[in-house]
Length: 212
Image (cartoon, rainbow, N blue to C red; front, side, top):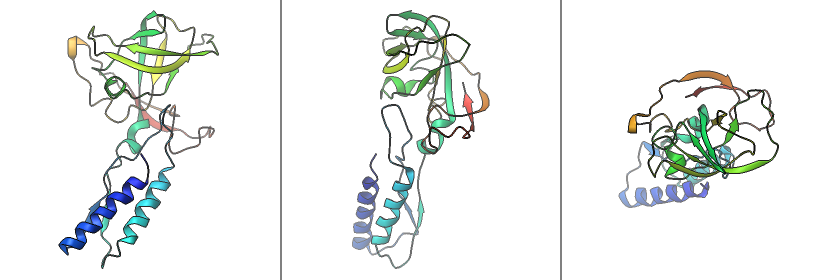
């Protein structure tokens, strides 16, 4: 997650070029560019670009190769959300209608903590936030999302939650395991829950993104 990882990789490319005597036309600096999550606040993306630029310039190559990258998550993570319904609450466990076999795979196995917010229905919400974990609908022991997901303490059955930053891999990982599958997708114009591109206080920032 640190920009210096790219300069280390590019330095190694320089060693290979030196040993082989061949200057490539293209250098792929790879992926790994971050997005923002509740437990992860990366450096600005500009820092990564500057680190890559400096590292390539240090190679002192006879000709400047074209640089390509695989930005992935940094571009698309905040372009998608999933809306889930609380089917059951048992203390701090919420049983929801999507899970690790649906669009929330990364919430289960790598244990990504995604940003969440309650869908506004006019209900008075507690100002007190409390940690929750999620269980999906499949009755499988791996359909569990540890979190913690910080949400109002007075949530109950029938409330809806938006889970953000699912634009990368969320739709791709969906399965029809145990007969649960949702293919209702809508494009909306709204502000993502979190963004690596804009100051969170910028009320004018909006973008199109998908809600499943």
